[in-house]
Image (cartoon, rainbow, N blue to C red; front, side, top):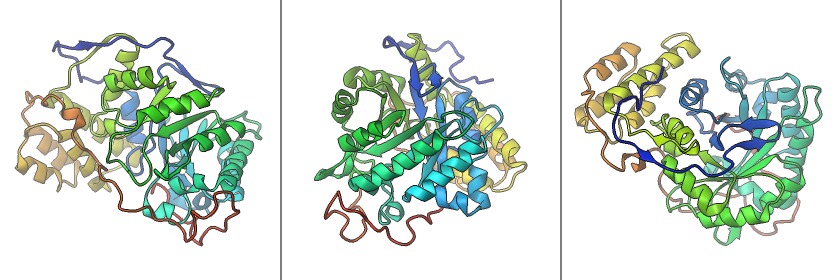
Amino acid sequence: MNTVGASSQESTNSPSPAGTGLCIGPIALDIPVVLAPMAGVTDAPFRVLCASFGGAMFVNQMVTARALLEGHASSWELTRFHPSEKIRSLQLYGTDPITLGEAVRRLVGEGKVDHIDMNFGCPAAKVTRNGGGAALPYKRKLLRDVIRSAVQAAASESQGKVPVTIKFRLGIDDDHLTYLETARIGEEEGVAAVALHARTALQHYAPPAHWDRIAELKTQTKRIPVLGNGDIFSAQDALEMMSSTGCDGVVIGRGCLGRPWLFRDLAAAFAGEEIPAPPKLGEVADVIRQHLDLILDWQGGEERLAHFRKHLAWYLKGYAVGSAVRAAAGQVGTAAEIHALLDSLDPSLEAPEGAERIVRSHSNALKRVALPEGWLENPDATVQLPRGAEELVSGG
């Protein structure tokens, strides 16, 4: 049972917006909140941990369509969901309509998913230089073909229609904005919702997100929900985004890294209840232990615990634990070492005001966006994608 916020510390109170539910196709959410798919982060243990704090939809990390069709064991392993997950939501990456459609048919036909999200927002060079991610929406014909293939495949199976959504950025840079056209094409091709990360690929994660563009998108998108993403680090941020933009829901990314209790705060905020005070370090340690137990249970042992170091560093952000503890957190490799580190912490330590906004994960702008040669010449041209466009490692 979660203990974060269980004390009688002072809390803040925020009004809940009217009509806070959200429907994505046949999927009804109690609160309009979606966990963003994050490579190497939103695995089953993390999703289950976040869900234990409050209702939302929790999206699995990205899987490459071609890797599934070629039978890569590691990619199929990523499609596995915990038995407790009520909504099996998966992000799928692909640039070839035929490959993507067949992967969707496999996933839906074998009853492995309840929702599919498509990645048109990744700014990573290994993705965009092959015409994928945030680069793909610039080629409108390819975008339409890819979306149509996925939507039709998701609706053609006997299990019933699985909703497809798309997540994208403002565009490649300020001179090549694509978000309004991307949403229009998605709506015309039958996606169930659109989600806008209100930065360009070039901006990456550095400047403040342009919430005004989310508001603009909402005025242009009439038949399906519009979700906003970018700079939501607290429950109050979520309420303010929805109030200022009119969007139908929010997508939570970096704001929940090392802070899965954000979903508890969001549930309280949308219910019009008091938002609990930030947890003391002892409460955080309890959550870390819960997270570790979920990992050990999921992977069936202590193998590959080194990946937990990044989570540990995120959990400790903002607490005055000292450089020696932070250094030790970067070296732990076993459950015993992690528990020993947690036992050494001062449980009474409090995070300073504003600790939720301390940078976690990505924070810089890009110097340039890697693109295939001639990519920006004609947005309506039929394109021949580079070799390797479909060969990315899942979760990347």
